[in-house]
Image (tube, rainbow, N blue to C red):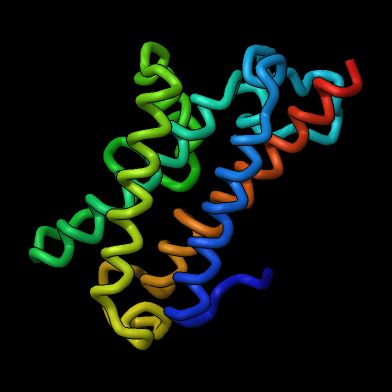
Length: 180
């Protein structure tokens, strides 16, 4: 599915990819759920997240925390409390450290709680998308707090694209489990 460019495409892609993610999760075997993620034998998987996330909970919490970034950022800026998308002290060069902090923060969170948190935040993000018009979402420069990009691109990154990332990771884990 191409990157959404309209509100309608954003809603559809977000819902579809979320449903695909949940469908895949429901099909994971007990063995796949219990086996820690290990991508160390795959040299092409160099990005930090391949080492960071060790299980399904870690992936779901990552998605949840990025929803929280989006929700907090939009709500604050709507109330004229200017804030950047990434919280201090992080920036786009150091956000990997923020992702590790999210990971550490949730090591005692259960899979059930992570699932519930993600379900709730997904709903909240979809409700927030509904507040905006197509132009407000996908025209650059409507909100000065979005910088040189559109508000919609932040929603895409935090929903449909991120769900796609999670799907790829879980499918890679499934392949590893079948091949070991």
